[in-house]
Image 1 (cartoon, rainbow, N blue to C red):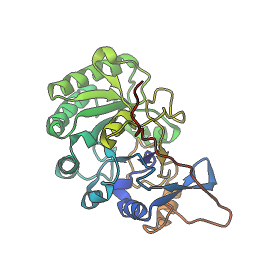
Image 2 (tube, rainbow, N blue to C red; image 1 turned 90 degrees about the vertical axis):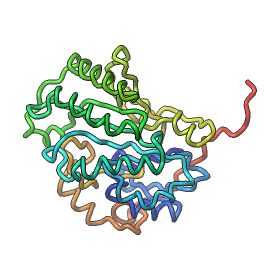
Image 3 (cartoon, rainbow, N blue to C red; image 1 turned 180 degrees about the vertical axis):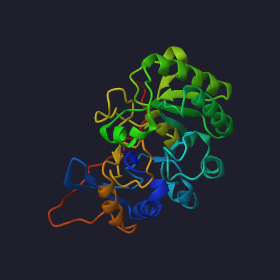
Length: 311
């Protein structure tokens, strides 16, 4: 199986000590977000974990411990936008902190393992289409030697994101505007030798030179693992998502980053409660197993195809 760490929270940035402890102990406990009394015990044994996908906006806390990832095929999905602290309030300055971290990570593990995400894209009085073109070009120039591709997506308005972003005066951003901007970004990226793909977008932009990304990418993981992986598309994701199946070990309402477009935090009060219950030595990301909880072993087998086929 593939481990996703995590679509629900920034584990490398905020919980790297916990994550490395879980790798050392060889398992992690994960609450079912739809049924919190059900907990899965998920093995992190490299014999059954075929790959790790790590999602982050700043991997700096993890850089000193990357050797712990060596037994696994892995790569990072690294979100790096040009938004300011009005949108990403707790992110270090990009030029002084985040961009150098991107470079250091890629220098350590190689550009194939660091995928740049410029998402989500939205329009406002401050963040116009021209702003995105200029900012994307500046970032592409700095990041191109350290990555192979960029993934873009357009803002999905969930109830909590709509509430959080109400003060930004978002502007209409229809399909034709999205198509025009995506074509420009793809052209800029090609000039720096980068491919551009979209994340879970139903809009077909292939005529603009933009493909559909597989953020949890079975082909990439197969290359990194050095053998074919028999992986299936994840039926639990949105219809336009091309990701293969994975087990997410994060938890909602645990990311203290405060990005206004975040869909994974629903309640500030719940966020503070869960962060207060985080124990770096605990098997759960937050909290402990209670008497009413039911813990079951997650059945996991490797998807590696190690036998030769002559068909």
